[in-house]
Amino acid sequence: MEMTAHPTFKFIDLFAGIGGFAAALEALGGDSVYSVEIDPAAAAIYELNWGHSPLGDITKDANESVMNVPSHDVLAAGFPCQPFSKSGAQKGMEETRGTLYWNILQIIQKHHPSVVLLENVRNLAGPRHFHEWEVIIRTLREEGYRVSSTPAIFSPHLLPKSLGGRPQIRERVFITATYNPTGNNLEDDPHPVVSIKDRVNGWEPQDWDLQRDLPLEVGDIPGTGLSEIETYWIDAWNEWVELYWQLEGHQPPGFPIWIDAWVESKNLVIPFGTPAWKSNFLIKNAELYSAHKNEFDNWLKKWSVKTDKFPPSRRKLEWQAQDAKSLWETIMHFRPSGIRAKKPTYVPALVAITQTSIIGPLRRRLSTREGARLQGLPEWFDFGQQRDSATYKQLGNGVNVGVVWHVLKQHVMRDVEILKTSLRGQAIIDAVTQAPSSPDEALKGN
Image 1 (spheres, rainbow, N blue to C red):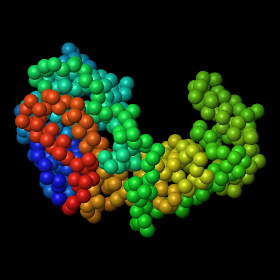
Image 2 (image 1 turned 30 degrees about the vertical axis):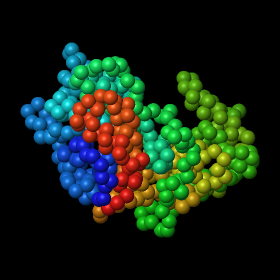
Image 3 (image 1 turned 180 degrees about the vertical axis):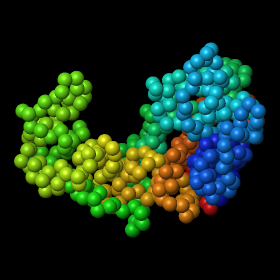
Image 4 (image 1 turned 90 degrees about the horizontal axis):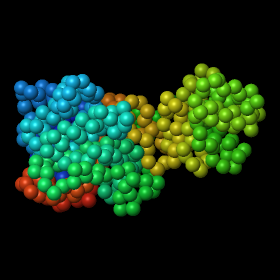
């Protein structure tokens, strides 16, 4: 790899996956001194691209009796969220025992890196994990770190491409902390370094164009085609969309269209105790069906929609494609809740299961190369000879490179006064301030 030359800092990469953090941190000039990933397949792809194997187990490398993790300046971790204990005195470190965050804390206690950069799914900041969130913030502060108690939530679609953004809505929580053992002249609770309300350089997410900005690949791409039955489902719903436009003269309604709820309004019976949201949903579907019963019945019969050809999840349509005139013009997602359609601006989050987005105009799924682009990985990134299913899984579990780059830069700008008081911190400042505007520029060589 040919990297942009600027000052280096040392970093470690925990729960490394295939190297999303490594891509951003090496692009900034960072020097990896330790990485760890327990999944052999992901570790093999990491080694193929970054030149060293992270295969290992953090619980064996960092615990009360062993510390095989070397000193470093930046600790990066896309760690799994696990429930913490609420028993006893609820002292921070003890509450985390038995979780992987406890192993991270062991490393922090030993080395006190200048910057800690943790990433997790958005649910970490939700009500179900309030206790875990509170303990993480408290334990970092107990170790002398300046950290916001407000979640820093961000997504690659909120960044323009010129700054490393990508047309993928992938909201993730970041916890960014700076080591500040003196605590002098600092407020107790700083603002988060990023927010989903941010409009960076005035960028509007609706300005994305998937074909232009990803870009999408052309030609026949093995493994991305739709099956005969999948094409049948889309053709059927496409005819319904076109029929609706013909009947109503405007886009389909935004509420979920559910064929199994189609009864005439006069025959609708809503069971006692049905939640208000579901009652409203049933009423709207009954009204929709009643207004066009004959036309909808003909459509149902023509396409055999109420037979085994359509499993329950394919009898539902979630229209989010605004004024698109055809389902084949949209980006589609086969979900347990139905077929979701949206305009071809940005795509839903890549996930580690087989819900790969369907590009309607190209009549195929996203390719693995397009998935890698969505995660901000460079064109030279190599997945070797592994099966596409493994690649999709790894991409779905990964972190977006541009978001990591942006979050770290924003964090350094926020805490620059602390960082410049140490040589380690100054090295990070120098790397960030002398870096190009996006990781794409730094990673383009090979």
